[in-house]
Length: 97
Image 1 (cartoon, rainbow, N blue to C red):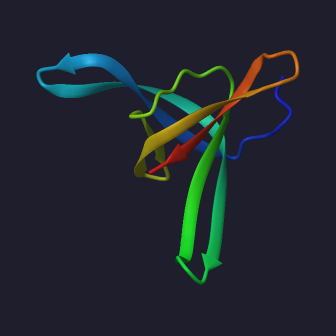
Image 2: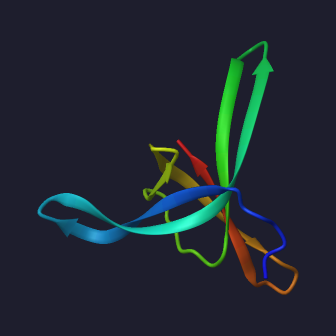
Image 3: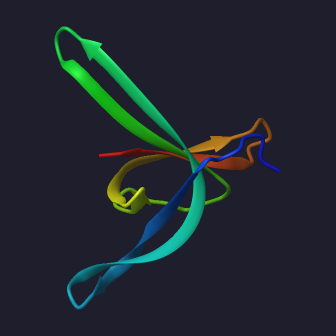
């Protein structure tokens, strides 16, 4: 049982290995996520915004895969496993480009 409730429906487009007719292949999987939006401002860099997805469960998602959220396709730049104290994977945290 997961300790947090997800509010956003997303589609994971998981990168398959190899090419098919010279094209990258994906297989799709529906999931729920918590979307974390970080906004900030610094004098040096100005305004910035970043979006991360916290997806509960044991998903295998590699950089190069995609997340579809609210009709927009985002490329996954990084994936971190979120584990509990026993080492069991509870969720993944994905950053996008």
